[in-house]
Image (tube, rainbow, N blue to C red; front, top):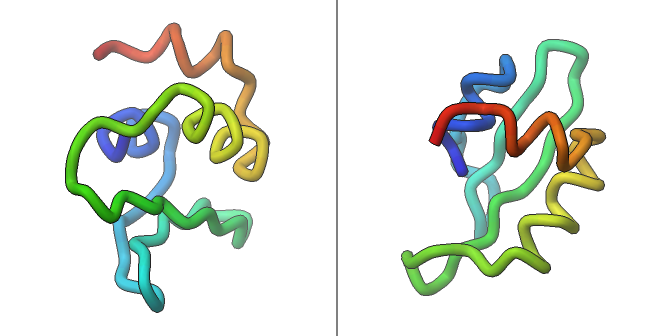
Length: 64
């Protein structure tokens, strides 16, 4: 997830409270909750993308 955010121009991850945070140059911020250190479920990914203003189709086009 972090690699894809970086490919889309986001910086981070940065520490922020309980979770890591990704930041975009226009000052958007989004928390990346991952308390288990494993893959993030698609439903949570979808909510994170909505908060970040990223279209799921654009997300899928980024190399894995």
